[in-house]
Length: 293
Image (cartoon, rainbow, N blue to C red):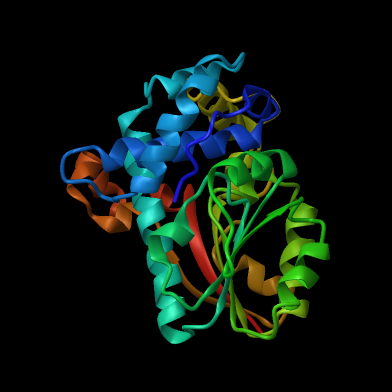
């Protein structure tokens, strides 16, 4: 249930950099939900987008003004919807195996996954920076099994908060997050999860480390800051060369599978479906699934 209350526009103004991208993905899900034959139906996202629109339109942020008018690249809308659908599938598969498991949505932004997939018994945590969680709490109420934590993913105190609810099988989801973070800190985070939650699983989106240097980095930066209107300090900082690279960080990290949105084969991808068989295009930005033993 979305709270229908006047939103303090000063909360929206506090969003900056990476936090703004969460509003972009929210609007992508809302736009797709209202499209013909939608990839993803997210009625909560639709209601959130409608309530946030007046505050975004008054923002000084170029990107927030653009998305409030829903002037979003259609290809990006399809990409975000396919990704959200696949990550929902990962979570649903996990709770089918562990109905009373715990899901931690790292860098959750304005995601509404709990509202989409709740099975009535799972424990779910949304975690993001305090300023974003402050907005989310204004709009989406917490509950007995749904909690919001406002802190950095690197503030490992949140791990103890999750563990305080008892030992449960755990799945950590990092959708559209890790690439914006410092590489050494990402490695430390994954190793901390592996040490504190043995037997857990991690699903995360990554970019190819090749795109973090030279001419390739320039292409990505121009795309983020030009086409999408992100701020200059919103850059990709972490990448891996291949899906097995994280296995070299610790013998307990086990690669399970990978996915690229070309794999969906959805008609809305159009000619992009041809890239399914191109290893170069598949490994620009993709998703990896690990077990942390």
